[in-house]
Image (cartoon, rainbow, N blue to C red):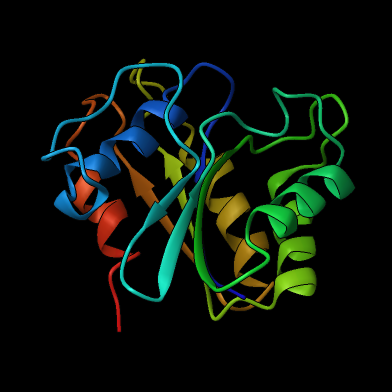
Length: 171
């Protein structure tokens, strides 16, 4: 059962995986607060005795996955127990994946999580942002229901780690 999803959203090469790695400032993930830099970061972490984290660092857009493949892979990685999922997404359709709104609509239908948080990189790691585009995206996401929308400043590598990790910390 997946209870929570947190998605970091940004265009390709704007810092999504760096921001997701920053959750390792949380000592519960076993890195003494250090952000791992290796390419082979594990996908699964224990958050408590009865809850785990499935962490994806590469967006399904960049992996050339279909929406069905993304949903199936997520389901297979989280088939037993209680889960939180943290993953990157791109805002627009790319390759075989739809845009973030259609993707999250499908996530909500398939998994029925209690909460979904979308963190848009604004500004992204290059300092770029488009407030009008973000506002339109948020309005579309809010219509889905059960979706929280936030902007996070991706110009620093680890400053958002606690903000992201705290979403995973609940009883």
